[in-house]
Image: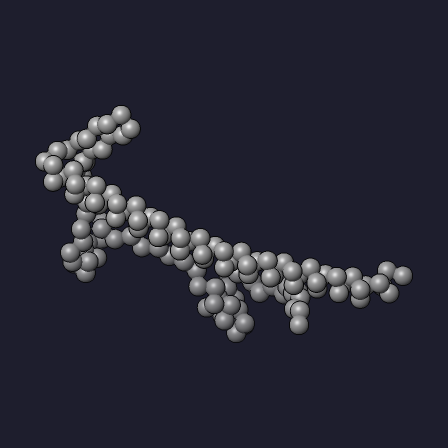
Length: 129
């Protein structure tokens, strides 16, 4: 009985997978659209802050206080790299990260090499057409 109905159940699974995939694609497009909008808003904020900074500087003031807000010019230092190659030769100024190359590990295992800490594993997957 159950096996006889399994084809229609698999068809229902296929329909659900298609709907979920379509919804996922819609959300992916929405994320891209919203990310673009977020960047535009952040750029507008930077531009307006820059205009406000120049206006306050033009008044030869460091602080403007009103009942609604207080705007203060703050001065801080930032690091500007002018010669990256020269700095890379100084070990304490370098940060290196090490990651595993799973592609090379996989190639070695498939070639029959023994790799401590890794193994090939068979997994089943399902593809729909």
